[in-house]
Amino acid sequence: MKKILAIGLRTNQKLNIFSGQAMMFDALVDFLVANNFTVGVIDLTSEYTNIKIGKFSLIRTLEYLKIIIGSINKFIKYRGGLLYINTAQTKAGFLRDLFFVNLAWLFRYRILMQQFGSNFGNFYSELSPWFKYLVRTNFNKGHFIIVEGEFTKCQFSMLYNYQNKVVSVSNGLPERNLLITNKGKIYNPNHTFNLIYLSYMIESKGYWDVLKALNILVNTYNMNVHCVFAGSFKNSVDAVLHINELEAEEAFKLYILKNNLQNHVTYYAGLMGNAKAQAFLKANIFLLPTYFKFEGQPVSVLEAMAYGAVPVVTNYRMIPNMVTPEVGLFVDPRSPDQIAEKVLFLIKNPKTYATYSQASVDRFLEKYTLDSYSKNILNLIKMTLKEQNFE
Image (cartoon, rainbow, N blue to C red; front, side, top):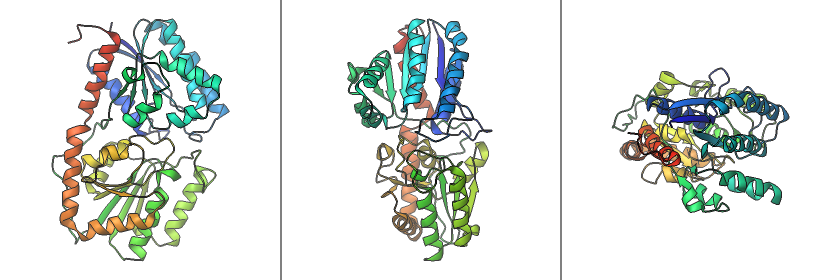
């Protein structure tokens, strides 16, 4: 039986949904279809997906209800197969997942869950005893739970037999339009030093720290640098500076004008396909000084490594599992001065820069290709379905 019902967020250009999780979901669906699975998809994406990340929203909850009602026919069609579901780390998202998992249980599905991000432990610890019981019961119905690393695996220690049930699988880069080679980059000091920040423009992802570091580099040290910011503005529950994404975007643009950075910044609400590939080909450094509450293994870090754009990142959550000291440089959260210092170091040391760039490419090719990731997931699907004749 090779029927799979897959539930998760999908990328959506119209709605500016380009998260790593959505890209990974799309890539896995394509991989399963290519491997002769019959795949049905329930798309959780809507115009309310990112109203305020991590905060309860009635309108988003109602949208979940609409998706649930519309999914029942698919549960009937694929009954007896496998349910693959990307699980949530919020109450509303969990209640949505609770319905899906129990409906799958009713229709005798085998269940494979995948938890992206690293905030599950905090989410669980803040719940009431009754809600904790619901969470444990629901996750115990999964045959396997896939997580991004050992750090996240330990957050499921409340589950029965979690050492065997919870499986760590490192992310792969789910990009279809890579223009990479096995060679790192060489920086020519006579050229502009190019930086790139690619992620949602969420305050705790650190985009303000990058912008302030750029200001230091340009207006204090008179450096020939340029930074691409790529990502739509999103509001998150851990935001402090601005009450919504419109106010945040206006403040971002005003800062650029006040500090005369117009010639040093290019902003895109989103980059896809060849346009994104060209931006990474040009970039010398990738910046993501994140302390985002729901951070896990950012896919954008893998993309930077694939192109030899040296990562300058925070030592946060599972990022140091990807970026070793040989591959990139670390800064503290909320530290634009440190970011500027690391960029200056690489500008002034082209040979060291080239060493980091090559190490980034090598580590990506060794550990984080989409082919390796997809095969690991496929093996878990085979184990979950317990079929012997897949080859």
